[in-house]
Amino acid sequence: MMTPWTRALLDDARELILAGRYRSALDCVLTVLSVYPALAEAQELAATIVYHGSRQSPVEPLTRQDMWDTRLDELFCSCDARGCTAAWMSIGRFMPGNVAVANPIGGRCEACDQYFCRNHFGRRNGCPRCRRALDHAPQVSNGRPSGQMVRLNQPLVHVQVLREGTGVVSPEYMTDLLSWVAPDVFEDSPTIRALSIHPWPDNPDDRAMMQVIVEHDEFGEDTHDLRVSNGHSKDGSRWAIVKVFAKMPKYVDPDFPS
Ligand SMILES: [Zn+2]
Ligand SMILES: [Zn+2]
Image (cartoon, rainbow, N blue to C red):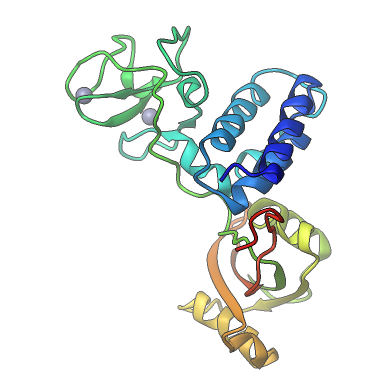
């Protein structure tokens, strides 16, 4: 919803873009998207920032962490070829009309409603399924798989990390892992617990959830939302993370408090 609060944040973002301050601009827009994820003006501006922020060398370049923010996931296009992980921002997400794209990195087939990256549409520049010409600047997108853990518009109050292995979990490991998969940890200053586990359990998610409830039974109550994920670190060791959110809004539109 376009309220004075929303408009002020989006105006700030436009000014910051002109100054080449892409990170600060994205912050403003992501705050709006936290409250209004489907607001078209905010989505367009986010797409502009991501598109230009990854191509130009601005004063404040976007980091990998910014680019993988889950609030941007649905704006991205991703390749539908099996096993392909390519994802890109379509210029059509913020520039409507017929846009000619030189050296397109991806495109959408309107007949198949499928998306293909450059590696998969090849030199013929057509849909690999039906051979029709691709739209290289679609105004829609099919989203991308999340590269970070879920974020809610609720304050993060506690984080439990389980890591495969023995011994003390180092602060370096924690900073590395959390900035990679859960950067909101550094916005909300939750309490953080880490535990090494060996052998690694068959159900790491359940084991991590259990650890939270054993240490803090209050987080098992209706006043909190718990989310869990597991994966691999760069060194191949496995991890599971529980995020505990308090059930209250993190960002509130003061002009339209819901
Ligand atoms: Zn591909
Ligand atoms: Zn097709």
